Structure formats: structure tokens, C-alpha cells
Length: 145
Ligand code: IDP
Ligand code: MG
Image 1: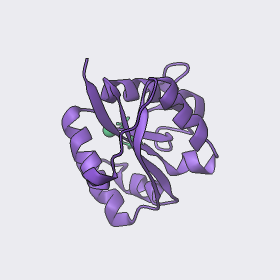
Image 2: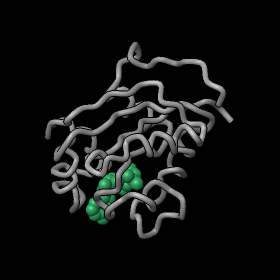
Image 3: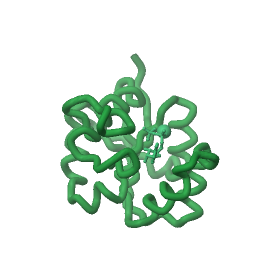
Image 4: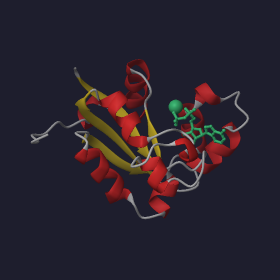
């Protein structure tokens, strides 16, 4: 296994629900260490650019409206197998299908307001991290995990 980095976003519903801390705890307890973090209210352009791969999907417009409805927390998570591990800790896109104990099962509202984003491949992780963070904003530190 290799140490990887992945992009994580706590979506506006996570902030509305007041569960930033609970979500970050799940990551830390699963060996996913935040090495960059920023709160930001995405502009329409930023959200559209981030989700450009979904531009043709019927839910695209609503997704952009949701993602710009309030601030988000942007994070780079680092750890062994971080990309797949984060997807596992997040759970399935639709909380109705998410495994017990996952973030989406425990906190998400529905298939759109599903509390967290996580990169789905090494290629996308690289692109998504670079979309929001400069290299100099990523700050490794010592940790037991
Ligand atoms: P993922 O976030 O689990 O990778 P994607 O298929 O990449 O899921 O979709 C991106 C985001 O678009 C989802 O997290 C969710 O917020 C939204 N979304 C996906 N499918 C639907 C849908 O069928 N209806 C409404 N929103 C959706
Ligand atoms: Mg995705």
C-alpha cells in the first residue's frame, strides 16, 4: 500500500447540520489525516468547474445550486490508500444504499445532500487537489497514525 492524498469536501449540508467535527473525527479515526484545510463559499463558476464531468447529467444544475448554497470545508486527506479508504468511510453516493457506520449513512439527507465529496481515482485526486490547493498550502505533520 502506498501513502496517497485525496480531496475531501464537507458539503453545505454538513455545515448546516453542525457536524464538521464529527466528520473530521471519522477521518482521523480511520487514518486519514487532514494536511490542508480551508473553509470557502464556492462561486457558481467554481462549483460548475469542479463538477464539469457531470455537466450533461440531469442533476447538474441542482447540484451546483446546492454546492453554492453555503460554505464548504475543503480538505486534503493523507494516508495509506487514502483515495479508496475515504470512499469507504464516506459510503455510497445515495445514503439509502450506504453501509452502516459510514458518514453518508449516518448524516446525509439524500442522494444530493450527501454531506461529503471524495475523489474517486488517483488521477481525479490529483486534479481535484490542484483545483483548490497550491502545493505550498499542503502541510504534512507528525502523527501517530
Ligand atoms: P460521488 O459523490 O459519490 O462520487 P457522483 O456520481 O460523482 O457521486 O455524483 C456527484 C454528486 O452529485 C453526488 O455526491 C451528489 O451530491 C450528486 N448526485 C449524484 N447523483 C445524483 C442524483 O441522482 N440526483 C441528485 N444528485 C445526485
Ligand atoms: Mg464522484
